[in-house]
Image 1 (cartoon, helix red, strand yellow):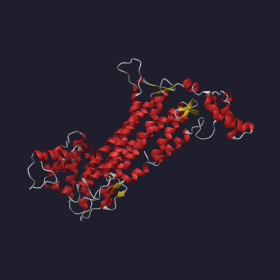
Image 2 (cartoon, one colour):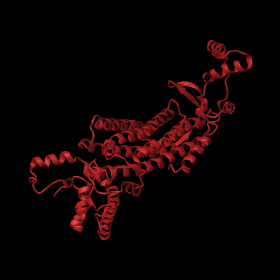
Image 3 (tube, helix red, strand yellow):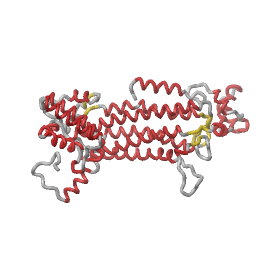
Image 4 (tube, helix red, strand yellow):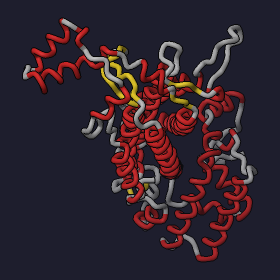
Length: 440
């Protein structure tokens, strides 16, 4: 089976050649099974560009386009297989076209390289996957806001250094994570700007003498515009992906902290939350155990993300201009990162929906020492002390701290973002504003 780069003078494969093939191809042909529809999409657009450039006739364009769409249907049905000996999806697609259309199938590669082909397919994949992540992120934010609103008025201890500090509330806890994820959602514009430039038409990184309308190709593929310099395409490979995975790891880092809180708050030492059995597992030796495995794995998945990010940074580090085979290794970390982020977002939403809030336990945990700062504030407001003087008096005689009802005390907070006024409606308004701008 001939590869795209093999000529008639190439020696027949022997055992060493097969080992080299297995090493250089790696699992690329398996990854390309996912990317194939994007390569087909770009190939259709490229065929139209060849028609405009006078390389293809109307009839040839129609035949090529029809055959490409047939391949896409085969792919949807699971009948389009990319084999190790193909090396990649580009070879598999071109061989299918040639088998069906003869020499016409060989024309599809005119004016392009596997370099701009694969990068175009990857960027199209990234655009679609990021759109899916946006929807899942949006859904989790809404779930957190609904959770906070459902438990309005429920106090919760606030912690610093893992020790009780000041009064918080369930809405403030949920709202903090919702707002952080919303900030990440708002920051998506930077990433979309990076992946929203079309590499198609840059060929091997130095353009072509054919009159390819790259602006039209970019528009046909819903890119914002093409990369200007053809050399930018290969320089961007790995560099863009590193920043994309950094963005995705920003999501999983928040989810890891959320999961860590849930693990603590549902433990025997706290009991603020109870987790449904569906998100817990048991022990093979201890019948009583209800382990928060889903939350623990959400927390652990961020470590995987950091590993993928490090891999991308290392592969692309110090490479010179142009294409290098090292860059082949940038596809898998991105694909894994999307998978981790998507699964983690879905499981985090499931986890939030599985929580029962134990309001009495939470309120009882809001013990007297948590109101020490408030007792000092009262001396400032009603006795004329400076705050530092009041602080000293409370520290010297903590028994003077009043025992407040935590639930009732929440009502005394009025400023935005406080335990009694978490501002969930404001966060929800910002989320809806993003929807109006088509962020989702």
